[in-house]
Image (spheres, rainbow, N blue to C red):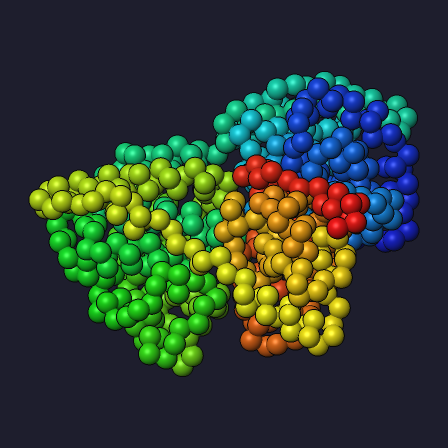
Length: 575
């Protein structure tokens, strides 16, 4: 179950192992968990899921389940034994859990049934830290520990004492321990059942953010701006990040890009950002000639994946370079732990100016990287909707204080408006034209939610994930639907898991027909998917993109509690 080098199971070995697992009734085996599982629909991670037995049981109880299994042959057995599975199956393993982390999901409950003994002792500290990082506050980890272990099968000794020590070191505690029988009838084998619970987020991330926001000395708004910028990247462009040990490496260029998006409206309105600066484009380290020369570019133009015209490319490149330098030598240098270590280490580079400037991941990485502690990155993904308002309020208070020192009168509502993050306007006309063109070309176009044929007079372009809850006009999020379904039923609701699964083939067919046949549109589709969706390395495989969409749906459902829509009702009513 671990990342270390292990011989892969053959298909025959996997089939035999899956048969043994499936021979044990999941309800009987996991009876000890029944009063420990969340009472309402929860997001659950099954680590080392094997044949899918426990994942299927948890899903049947009404939970949203992600099952991870490193063995390809066992994943095939999971699909064979549970062809109608409602759990998500993912290739991943301890201790890194890299693929799971890339989904951006947080979990109420994590299950490790007969898994921990496969994690080498020198990897367990890291593995436990990763598990705690994936938990929501108040979440729990359930483990079963075998005794004695079979060293010949790659197992390592395990103990209750070790888990208790790991829990204490990671801000968690052991809530319950019990002994369980071996359900395969092996008299010499016994099992320890343990539940570890995290009372807070268990990582120290929230107190650290709170200290920076409320208590850190601030001679300018830079510290608040960097925290808000990183939070925005974690929320809006998580696909750009790469795991690196205990850190998440973010392209320094995208940090600078989002930094400029925050500051540009403030500087253009001469809103002070330090006690002494009185004019927007003066006395701030990054506000030099290139930024002033960005002309009519709006903050919305400064978006990941966007193209910069030839008249603005030199100014854009220079503004990013200046922002990267300021971020490195100012807030990233002065945001430190008590021992003086940087919270956000920076490795800065100076790329050359490209002939054609598009804000691609490759270009933005060429400026270097900013490393975010993994637990802090996870907290920012999970709590962005609560962190950002606190940052804005503190930033507003600082700005008003600076203005008072300068004997300037600011109109608070105008300052607050300038501080709001700007999203592109809700606009589906271009995508609608693509849909109508397909109809004009006598191509069949179907409502992704009902499968019914569409005509131009009953066509709506629907935001798969509702704009009102999560403003996103990316191509992958815009799908054709019957007007009556979209406006009377789905409206501002999130499609539930079953509805999204049922629409998979139609959504992929739509992406292929509408976007993938034109190189320019395909490039935009790919850039947007890789930036916004957290679980894909490449957007070339549309099935991988859809899997990432499904994980994002799960994140929105559990982290933002967006109300859901059962789209099967639309089909049953013949709409």
